[in-house]
Length: 220
Image (cartoon, rainbow, N blue to C red; front, side):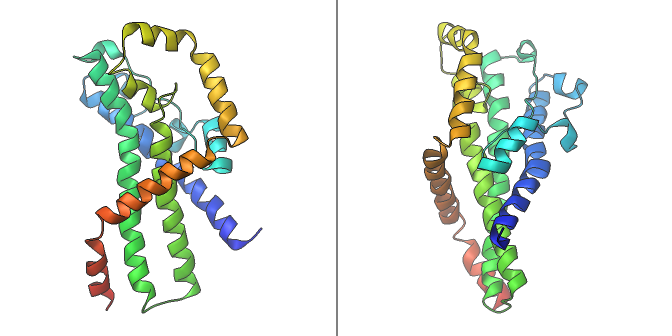
């Protein structure tokens, strides 16, 4: 196994035990702020990875780069507006991934600037780690926005759908989820998710163009 592949798996472990807890904590925090203390009672307002890591979701992340954590349970009756509360709570996780990816992009740009004057093998591998870290975070954000249960996108979509549609999704959730898991395992979603992931990376890169001159100035 080459060094670059080892690094990729190492970054995936960081994602599983650091970023997934941040993602799930964001759900719990949003629900708590919107009036539902169920996540707090269940011990989900924590960064402890043991409270948030889902074994199957973690394996999917490790082998495919896309996956999920243990869903944060909420009681929608505690929200003032049911659909809005559910949608905002669901959106908090992918938003956290985008924020972490943004931080990773900024760190990557500073490392690129530093590499022009302080290049070394250690710098090269550190840069690759941050690039993978950023890409996987953005990929997780895109993945979780897919409107398929139990992913966050399905709860965000429910803000715009009818009760009849919600009933259909609830009655067929098991079959839909199993079919979706099959698509993940077979790699059928790798290319479309990769396109979205790379598109988000390109967009974040353009949104942080202001970092480039600052980074060059720091290491000039």
